[in-house]
Length: 165
Image (cartoon, rainbow, N blue to C red):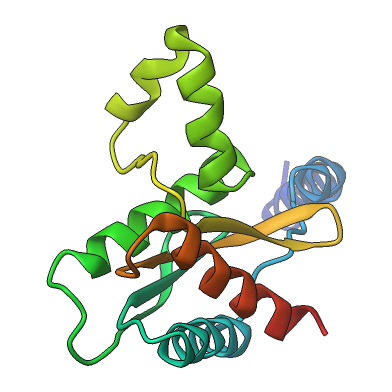
């Protein structure tokens, strides 16, 4: 086979492989909603402002759908443990797609689920909520530092309400 025909044959072979691979590649591409940095900031600011209004200095963390921190804010005079607590609450709410209050109640009523607390970064304290776009969980928000998880959760809810409008 001469060089021109050999190059043409290789070109056709490579082209046919590329064309046949395209549908397979397209089938494996996922389109996922993700919380933006702008929305994460708005939610965190609203949560901090709600807690300030209620007289609490807290930390707030917003994580994206993969559990990575998008925004973390620590208010003046909040405790040194609150950034980690807020992050873990946000991560837990995202991971289980429910409020950390609901998850803590489930574990309390089901002793066989007690081992959930042994999973890295899971925390069974109120104050974490999943962030949804429709029915899809796109992130989580956690608040730590108010005198009680129920009060943390009020602030987290204010953050979600701010970006839901």
